[in-house]
Image 1 (cartoon, rainbow, N blue to C red):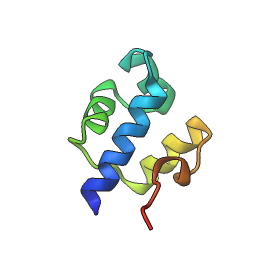
Image 2: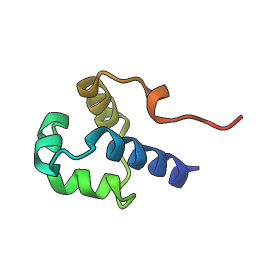
Image 3: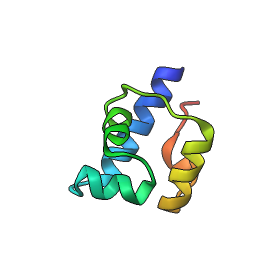
Image 4: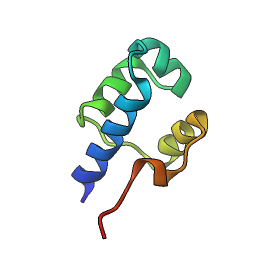
Length: 70
């Protein structure tokens, strides 16, 4: 389950970043470019606190990221 959530977050972040440089998008999110890279490539998990911060800065909800199969 955790891997699937990491993959969904990675895809969401890649889509949101689009063609914006890592450094610029990372500043917008309040994280380092290296952290953004690791999140986008599923190499790092995220805390709920950090996720809340990122979603707030993007003006998104968890539902925008995590679409669960029913």
